[in-house]
Image (cartoon, rainbow, N blue to C red; front, side, top):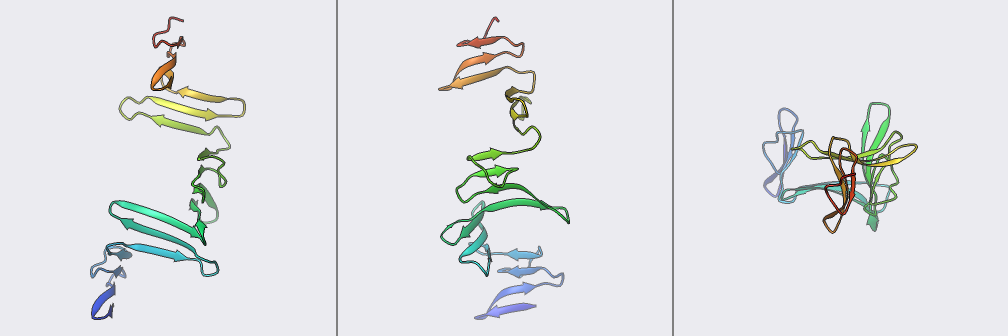
Length: 173
């Protein structure tokens, strides 16, 4: 099936049920071709409550609007009976992972030992930041030294043996 306006084909449904907008050969269930392709979702019972998914150049973007303010962008999963929220960007630009109300720019929440892990792909070096019921930890989880820097200079150095140096990267104790 094809739909034309002003003598030009605007929409096509092919024999497999794929829908093409701006293309005569759709190869996905919905295939949109345009110099500025967008999908707009609008809540009919709200005022300017819209979300837009669009592609520009090499950038895929998600936008959310709530009338005259930024909207919320939420990522969640659904197992067939329960929706689980994984992450949320608030209208103020805060990212919450494991929380729907982040209190800082990046807020990680988990009921059991939330951990941030940074890993070097070539050496396997891992640095972690962790909180649990009784303490907070920052350091390496591999057999590596750990340091604290200011102005890109190491001010505190802890060797994997446990020796600590202040102002030196080669502590004796």
